[in-house]
Length: 365
Ligand SMILES: [Zn+2]
View 1 (tube, rainbow, N blue to C red):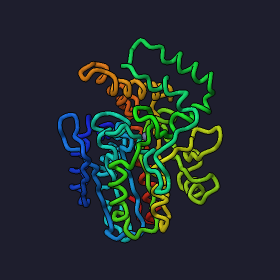
View 2: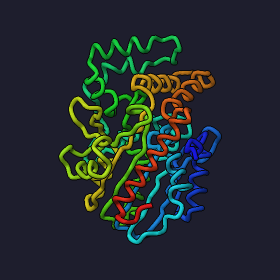
View 3: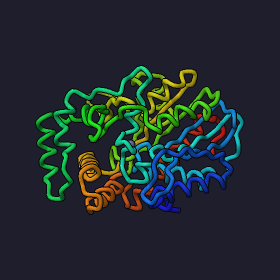
């Protein structure tokens, strides 16, 4: 079977499929609406499916769509899990699986990376003692280039301008400035918000109940758009010599585990979901992995994000650039190529299976 069939053509289909498959498997289902609707007036919800012990000690959490449009892939993994890999998985004492579908339902439905307030939700989870202000030192230098206040043009020599910017500032400066999170440019890329998002509040209110008294949590948050095409890496916020990183290397392999190293691929973000989860549940051994599956070269990813953001804010309502840039964004974060689609879902399923095997010893699928 090709897992390319696990992808949905839009958010509404993905949501229906996730809920239907979860119900068929006997999961407990919950839905949390956000105060927005989709392009066809449909409800937008974060859906939750829970399987296993109602009072677990060990929990595996699998989340998708924190970055909206990246949900096409994460949802496909979750649907394939429910429709294929989890069939026959009996209830195991002390173990539960929590699936969080479409953490940014607005971005998924409208095919954006950002939420209804242009927020990058993986920069919005500041800790209670942090303030929603400030930006990396050089962000304002890059603002005019990355966030132009005009509609996108197909004829702009983006690549030439981007290379000139990289040569002028250096790739490392760019990498440590553009994507790490900023709180001062509400129409700019990687805006972390001015306050807690709806998704933040939904998770803060309910995650404690979903996890209950669990002492061990392994959380895999699915993303796309970073890394080599059709391969994946597990990004971990913890320090390279921490217990979590050692554990991850032991269980998932040193070839896929990425920690922050100066000069490496990883960069330190503000307001990341993983750091927040670990801080909120100090009583748990909470292991959080941002699973990034590669699609296109980073320069093409940035080009597509920039163009879509310009169209969103500055193109007239019915201008074709809106649809064109959204379609491009879907291709960038969930390529139509059937081999890519099958390969990454297969890898994602294996990853969840590995997490289940190590989290619930001797209770694998
Ligand atoms: Zn992402």
